[in-house]
Image: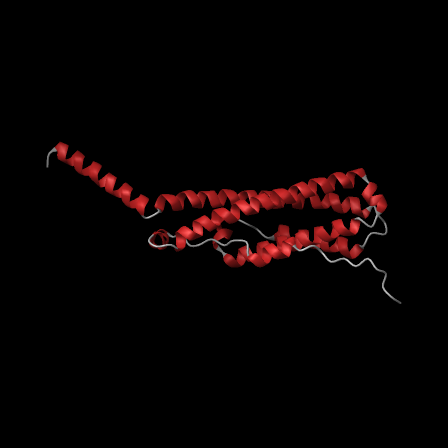
Length: 204
């Protein structure tokens, strides 16, 4: 085998390998896997940003002596639960861990939403500039969370379609690319549901 033929053979083998990898979706898995991890990191960052706001919000609310203690306690407990769950890129491939994470974040969303609704009944709290600033920051953070979640959902949808479609599903099995966990429809509905608050005095 001459040197020229060897070179031609290696070039041909490289071309065939490249075509095979492209056709089987390997490169697409690489791209979407990295994109999903990046999107997930942003979701976690925004949830952490929200969690960091909670202590200041609680401190501001505590200045209102008559504020509902039960509402405040639920926010504190929900934050503690949400921040106690350790999340890593591997969480994306663990449906049970992912479900616990989204449930905890949903509970914190509900608790904070109720806190904001209840605060409307306290004129002094509404007039507090520090609390107003924190509320605006929280609203902005919730919007960031929504954007980050939507980006993650779309990225994972694209990845999962690739992982479940033929023939790329064969590549997924061989190369170890299982479908990733995503935010559930039930979770989305729970987070978007406004809290029910009854301000009527209980009958004696």
